[in-house]
Every structure is written in C-alpha cells, then in structure tokens.
Image (cartoon, rainbow, N blue to C red):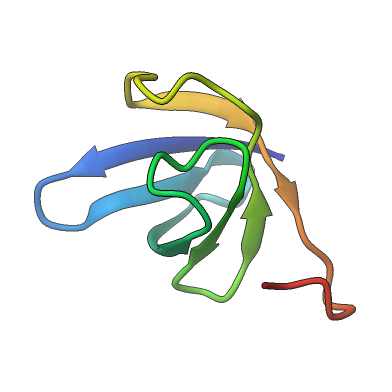
Length: 74
C-alpha cells in the first residue's frame, strides 16, 4: 500500500494513507532509521518498509506491506 511518512512537531513520526484518508503516529519500529524493518502505528497495524538510505529525507511516499493478522506481527 502507498503511504506517506512524515515528521510533525507535535506528533513526531506519522504515516498517512491517502486511499483511507488515515493518519496515525508511528509508535514503534524495528530499526531507529526505519528503513528495511517493520513499524507499528497507533491503530495496531504493522508495516514492512523497504530498504532505503538512513539519511532519506521526509516526507516521502513509499510502498509498504501490511503484515497480516495471522501471527507474523513482531
């Protein structure tokens, strides 16, 4: 799914999903740099992010893969 990751002064890192008109803060991540691991957002979704350079500038729109409900969450 296409998501935008951005940083805001009040919410910190957050994602925006245009097709669902949904914005949620990122509450946990596998790696401090985000890229190549999973992130967890406030609504409980776990998304796998692509490998990217650690100094990738935000905001950025990327393709992320949502993990299923079948126990493969971190």
